[in-house]
Image (cartoon, rainbow, N blue to C red; front, side, top):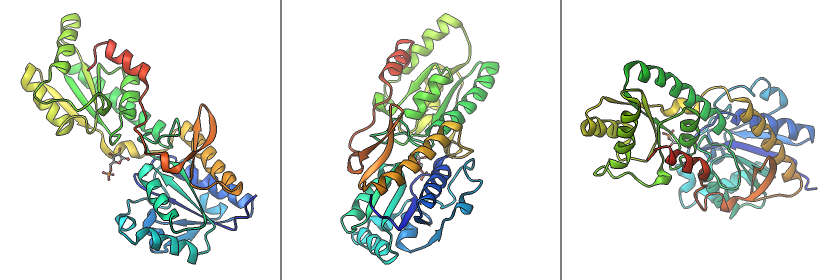
Length: 331
Ligand code: F6P
């Protein structure tokens, strides 16, 4: 067992529902093992500026159900400056931090890796991002909630699309990953799903999208038609694509950009449970000496994965669902 006296935690990058549940699990697990916990504010910025708060059990009372993060989150350009990682390591040393837990995505983990070049303490990552684009874990904290949020919107848009017999394009987040779009599109019964994994669409050739629309019209007549478009799949996004389609097929197409709504809201049960499990597991593994790893979950089992490898390759979206969606007429 490694004796950890003082542990720090921060949330970094795009906030995700369940980050609070994870902070809570870390604080409760550490407190039970007599480890002091501090939380840096505003991601790595709080570390560089030594802006932090001590976290006791009472500070994490009643936060498991809250979206956002009590520690605030941010991206941190200062950490990317040449001396940023060394300064961050100095701050950790000055504050007597034996171990740091970073809750965030692969960009945040890159920041942690950079700090590790100058820091002798332990560093561990917990995957927290709605995008689910972190390799080494089946699910990231926030993904399940983001699907349900998107789904709620898709179901509502379906009502108006159906009443008005229109084509709707719903743009979902995910950065360069189609995880949210594939999941919410499948669950929402979308007629088409367009993801970055299928390659950038060529604005000069919309045939692959138009053909299934025309096919559906032949089969069903005029009816609602819903296309889920992952961000970064089409130049100018769903709005441009809706305009191009309206022009090309002469049917009114409307775009709905869901945006940051997908990052908010109370975490669903699955995210609270995952966050609790990974937060507690991270503390336990630190006590066993783990460092430079991410605490993830694969096939239901908590497991460790090298932090440096989490962003190595794009995590593949479900090939079975992709194949099925394409079979039923999707792009
Ligand atoms: O990584 C989370 C995420 O919400 C992505 O899905 C999205 O591309 C990005 O962050 C948006 O970033 P910002 O909040 O800086 O606009």
